[in-house]
Amino acid sequence: MSTRFRDGSAAGMSARKFGKSWYADVTWNGKRHRKRSPDNTKQGARELELLITRTLARDGNLDALDPERQEALRVPRLADYADQWKRSYVAANNKPSEQVGKEIILRKHLLPYFGALRLDEIRPGHVSAFVVHQQISELTNKTINNHLAVLRKLLRSAEEDEILERAPRVKALKTTSPDPKFLTLAEVRDVLEVAGEPWRTMVLLATFAGLRFGELVALQWDAVHTEGSFPHLRVHRTL
Image (cartoon, rainbow, N blue to C red; front, side, top):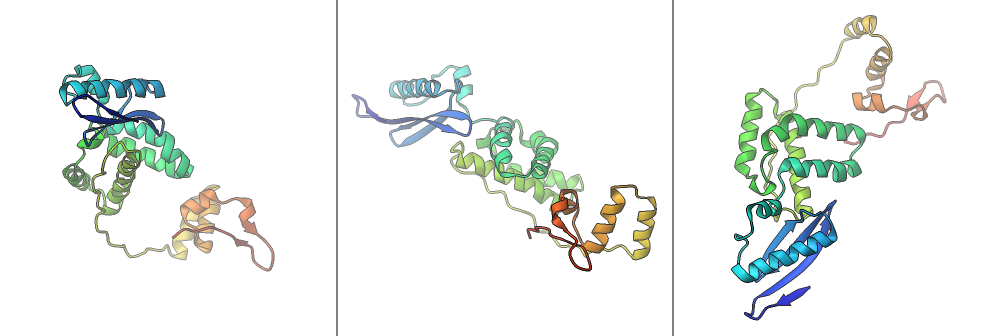
């Protein structure tokens, strides 16, 4: 919807829902103001549109809004958006094991460092400082890249939800692939002597079938085929 005022100024308005949150979307003389509604309903977003439009028509900016209202209009903190992101994007797109992994990375690493910042306050400098902090903690570049991947996807989701105009760039660190290490048969025997079930069976499968840990814990009986001289496993592997 577009409205034109007596002084010639014009406003485009709409109430829009992104994820589970309602937003007032007001374009005033070419500048866009997208704010999350404190009253998370379509009607609340429409009322917020009118408040924003009237304030802009009177003052040309939103400075005159009371501090409590201005705080409500701010872009959400990463901690607040992360909670919504886990319930929407992560729950819909990630396997349970991946959801647990993202939850751990958020809780132990990203929220302590970025949680109090609004999404639009996060700059490449913050990301660089986070990397240095993780390196001082003696984490490998590969582990830090896992943390950065979650941060990158969260910020891009905020951009897709139109909460951020543009997500900051989050670059991965360079990594080197370590030389693979294999247990000798003697070492495998030592492990089997002390391993109880189900670990003993898992060690045998990992040794002689080459299964990864995630494939072992996800293995179902319908993937085991016993036709022919030797049993074989059907495993879906993503490279």
